[in-house]
Image (cartoon, rainbow, N blue to C red; front, side, top):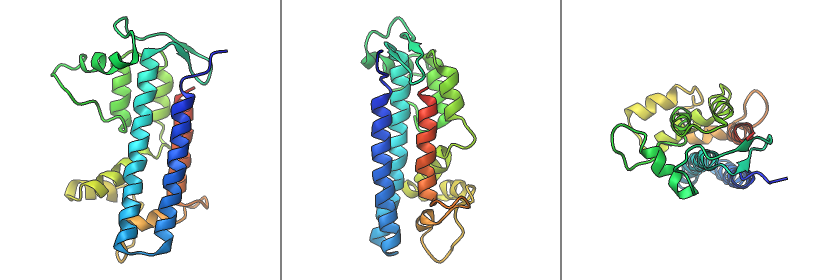
Length: 203
């Protein structure tokens, strides 16, 4: 049986998120200085970046086809113009009314699903259901990532809306090493959640 092309991006996501989780916890629990704060913030930024790369690869592989999903669904190319993987993004960009040179924000579920819809991928319903799942941590990660990268009023309001942070006397990023009601650290629950969503999206 043909091996699914989704195995490799899922494997890479598992490896990268496990590494970032380890680095975050090590930094957050060692001390609370500016150096460790920077390490924690960069880990969150990289976590979101890794997720965005997975989502991009998921959609590109789905549009290119010539593979099966993890669940065994055979995917044909979604567009006759897509004769190799490198043509997927140009075909996608051509679907927008206004000419654009930048790819969509793959880490944003709505924009990723919109891109998948524009490409008419065969597994759209599965991808949309998984990425848009209410228990996905991707949006929380995106909001915290945006605040770490762009400290301004809008990103501060968005990160406050996650209700993840409460301690005013310590850099908020360290609170992600705190425990959830389920007994795992917030950063750990994020990583676990991403892998669950990614696996479901690749079915």
